[in-house]
Structures are given as structure tokens and as C-alpha cells.
Image (tube, rainbow, N blue to C red; front, side, top):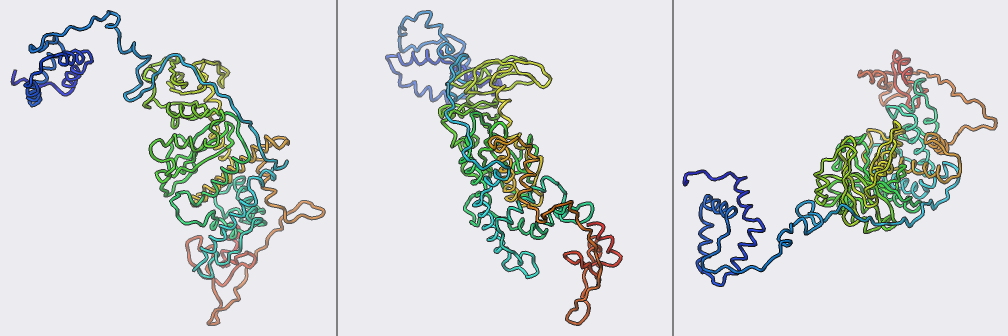
Length: 586
């Protein structure tokens, strides 16, 4: 037996675990503690047994676990108190309603529980009274002070950019941006979402394929591009805030919505993405979103898509919510002004947990949504249960209900508002099926962010070449426009409008007609006749100046010419052969 190989690690673990059996330990320690005589050599024997080989210890383990307990000869057996049969048959499962879900969890789950009843204590109302037209609602959300702040910061940025540049640079001829001009800029920007073209310069082309006179009438192309380049929202230096460049715009949105509107009972919380493929420290990836790569926004919305509050997630640099408990910090920060009023919040499994549901319930706020299976405090009976189609299992603890239900696939859910109750639900085909009430309500109220994303996708204004903070700012402008549209349809007292008609009404008011006559008739743009002429300017040596041919440059050829078009604004240099070709393409 000395040469016999020892047991493997799994077997050794099972043998050692036998010694840890509660009944064996109690009887062993009871005999040792009841001994009247103490043998000083026992400690030496114990120490020597620890120094022995593994085979000897494992052999002792097998005997100890499977043979009767033998008391030491040095002490007579102690008499044990008489115990009734009922007490001897009590198991650990009988001592508690249900074992904790996992090691370290102290939550005890029961099959029957009582839900806490909260009432909604606020009124759903709009505090402002902007007027009765779309432009009135737009002007309320794009206030004069907000636009003046943008003009001030943009002018500061233009002065900063123009320092040290040559006189031939466009930025050197910068003119101060005013609020009326900024409103025209916003009108053109929103109209680009209505009439989408691939390149920004195409909106100012005069050829028959691209002629959209409103852009050239309202603002020159170079001026628009200069404003877009200089558009800025803060002059502060880096203070550790990763989104400092758009912090003023984000805070304005959240403050404005908090001041003018209080939502109904049901709220939804989810994330959205702004498309961004460039380099950025806090660029995120969400595989189920329309834009998989980009800047992540956490949004609190109403079920119909009205955005109440949002924050830009800056990754590890976002010190307020990064680190352990990130999802819970996001939820509590977005709900800061809404806690304690009896709201019902709907979230997906990225945010939900038993601890968060209990914390919200203590703040008089319900929580309902899907749940991840691997969370620490989930009830083991629910997580490990293999439910059949249409079957539901539920457990309760401290007013929180966690269940699992299967339709096409198993879904684990959590709710502090709805009990285990099946309700009829009609699908798109008109078929009636039974679902847990919590899942039915989740499907009904959870789609707020998705609806907002859908509306934003109809008329996108962002361009690929913009800096990240300009994309966030323009995205916020779009959200303000959609919020004004939704509140106009609710509270203006006028017939409801589609988003398309509402946008056109606002854009038309931002871009007034500059050619109104007393007796207006059909206005037609007069045909433009281009004329080629010889350059008359001379250089220092008295020779005629030459220009590069614009058409040859497009074809990646360099040709100097003494001819140019005097009708075009920039008076481009053109060869005689390229004159017609160039003007037919613009």
C-alpha cells in the first residue's frame, strides 16, 4: 500500500469535505470539549499528523467519515441529553423559508409575497405657455439667452483661430456672428435634414441638377462653412471634464426640460448612440444599436419618446458614474429630481438588479424590466428552473418579485410593482396569448428611446466630417426640436401636425423670404449667363496674371490660363476648352 498512488485532486476534495460535515464536526467537538482530562501530548500528535504525507491524511479521512466515532480512552463517554425524534429529524431547509440564492447572498425568497403599494403624487403638466404656432414652441426651447451664449463663444473661437493666419485665409475676414444670423444658420442646418445631399457644397450649386436657391439666398457657402468651423460652446480650458466642450448645451437641455415639464407616472431608461467612427477615448460599442460605434447617451424618456434628461457617457473619465455600481449610479443620477413621487421606471437587464429595485422602492419608485441570470442576489430556484413554453415561476423578497417565463426563449424579469399574474395580450396577427403582467407592461412602456431614435433617423443633420462635440451639439439641437414638436401637439390646442410639416413650418419661419412683393406672383430664378473674359490684371513685371484652370485641376492636371469667368462669384480660371464643361457640372 505504500507504493499506491494517492487520489486525484477532485477525490481529495471530496474526502476532505466529508470531514466538514456538520453532524460529524458537532459530535467530534462535543466529545473533545466534554473530556475532563487533557492530554498534553495530543497537540504534538496533531502537529505530527499535519507533517505526515497526504496518503496517511486521506486514509484517516475515509475512516473518519465512514466509520463510527470512537471516543478517546483517557475520558469516559459523557451522557448526552435526551432529544426527541422530532428535533433530530429537523433539516436545514426546514429551519428557513428558502436558502439564499448564491454564496454570500442573505436574501430569502418565498413563493408568496406582498407588494408595496405606492401612489403617484404629482401631476403631468407643461408649465410654460409659448403660444399657438410651431415657431413659438421652437423659440421657447431655443431661447434668446441660449443663442446669445452660442454667438459669444463662437466669436471668441473665431478670434482665437484667426490669430497668426495669413490675410488670404477666409477666417481672417470673420464678421461677428449675431443671433438673427445664427437663427438663419440653424434653419439651413435643419433644412439639410429635410433635403439630404451627399456633400455640403452641393446645396450651393447653381446647375440644373442641384439648384436649391434658398441656401444661396439666405447665406453664402463660405460664411456657412466658417460658422460651422468656429461653432463653439465654451471658452473654459480643460478642467477634467471629458465633455466640457458641450457641457453647457447638455446642462441647458436638462435644465430646460426640468423647469417646463413634469412627466406622467411611466418612465423608461435606456441608452442611445451618436454615430462616431473616429478616434475618441470614450467611443463605445453596442452591437444591438443602429449605430454600433459611437458616443453613448444615457436617456430618461417618456414611453412616447419625449426626452426628459440625458447624459453623455465618457467611459473611465466619467468619474461621477464610472467604476463599481456604474449602472446603479446612472439610474440614480438621471432620476435625481423624480424620486419619491411614485414613478414606475422600466429598464432592461443592463441596469436591473435586486439591490437597485429595493433601493428605488425605498424611494417610492417602482422598477420593472428584464434581468440578467448571473446576478448575485437572484433566487436560485428561478435561475436554475428549466421552464416550459408558457410556464412561469416567481419568487418574492422584501416587496420585489423576480420570475422566469418562456415564450420562444426563457426570459428572467424583475418587478417591484406587479405580482405573478398572467394577462391576455394580442399580438400583431390578432392572436391572444397569456403573458406575465410585468412583461406585458415592460413591452408597452419600454420603447421611449427607440422611438426617439426613429424620429431622429428620419431627418439627420449631422455630417461625417464634423468634430465629435459638434455632432453631440447638433444631436442635442435635434432633440430639442423633437421635444418642442411633441409638446406642441399636446398643449398648443391646434390640430396635430406630422414631424415633417412641423419642421417645414419652423424652417420657413427661420428663413424669411427676402423677395416679398406687394403683388406676389410666380417667382422664377433668371437664367445665369456665364461669360469668359481675359484676365486684365498684371503682375510686378507688367505681364498678365495667370490662374490655374479649375476644370483641369478637377482632372488632376495643372494648366495656367489667362481666361476666367467674370459671372461666377469666385471668378475661377478656365481654359477656353474647359469653359462649357465646367459650367455644365455645377
